[in-house]
Length: 172
Image (cartoon, rainbow, N blue to C red):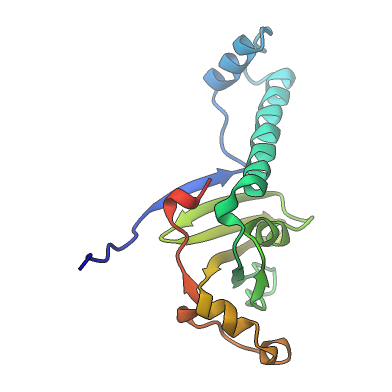
């Protein structure tokens, strides 16, 4: 009988506000056969912005392309508002891409996305604070449960048995 191995994997998938080092800007300029701007200059910060934009585009493209993430999932979490931290109404999505796009609203300034022991965690930073969401993969039993009509008309708390883990190798 195979022994169950606990998934303790934790890693960062994406950070929109990561610090860009000068060596990275210099290398990018060399690769693209451009002069490297002086550190802390206006041109330097424009280059940093281009790197961030490219990484953001790559992140969303990988969400769109990853077949392993085209599975039913549910978003839970809480909003970080000036007047408190209300829980969000759990929402089912057909794929992780739709769930992420729902979490990242127009008022969000930066995000970080972390794989934490089978759950995708998203922290969305905005002027009031931080919205914290969990995207969890629905199991077959969980999917059947949330398809029941009663969840359309009543408040509910998702049960742990509704979910299974995203495997680390499934993430991009």
